[in-house]
Amino acid sequence: MKVELENIKPMDIETRSFEIITEELGDTPLIPGTELVVKRCIHTSADFDYAKNLCFSPGAVEKAIEAIKNGACIVTDTQMAKSGINKRALARYGGEVYCFMSDEDVAKTARENGTTRATASMDKAASMEKRLIFAIGNAPTALVRLYELIEEGKLNPELIIGVPVGFVNVVQSKELIMETEVPYIVAKGRKGGSNIAACICNALLYMIDNKRD
Image (tube, rainbow, N blue to C red; front, side, top):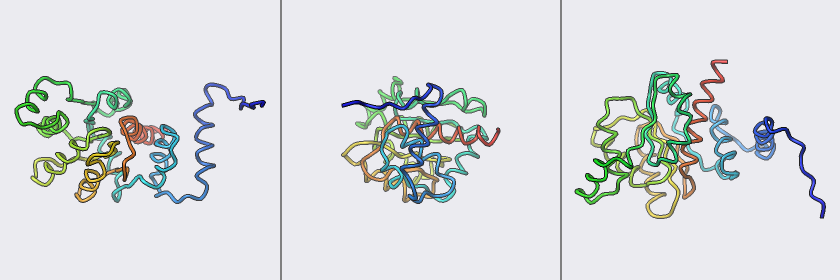
């Protein structure tokens, strides 16, 4: 069998990928203003389910962009998500990316309290005097703790990206975040991951850069 390949220059591969995504989405309804976020998730995962399972609170994208432009920082629950976020683009607006999962004080707190490191790292983040966006792609316990901190009035995030992947308490933790008044972007169901958390952050940054142009 002869396989026919598209003759695409390396610098055009991403552009062609997004053309294919747009073609295959067809008339699938997307919330105005969220299209780039959805398409970036599909581009990262090759999974068109994100066109249906990504949920946005009203004005979430606009509020997130405004927060980033005003120096908001991003807290992740994995080093993988941290490494995947475009830190140079974020730094243009005064923001930084943090992940506390490997910190010794976080490990110590988790042992003493009998919690996960993800839970302890959310407590550490809550003590920061910064505007924060949370990008959670792995640990549902991080989302549960964020929900508790919000309900206790100890934290008021600019945005929560809730896309942990897995089976145990994943669906439930996402639903908790969707019950809050905090802006959110959540992947309903079991799908997600650190790569998806990072690509949502990058999509927001690209949207700002496109508007600058």
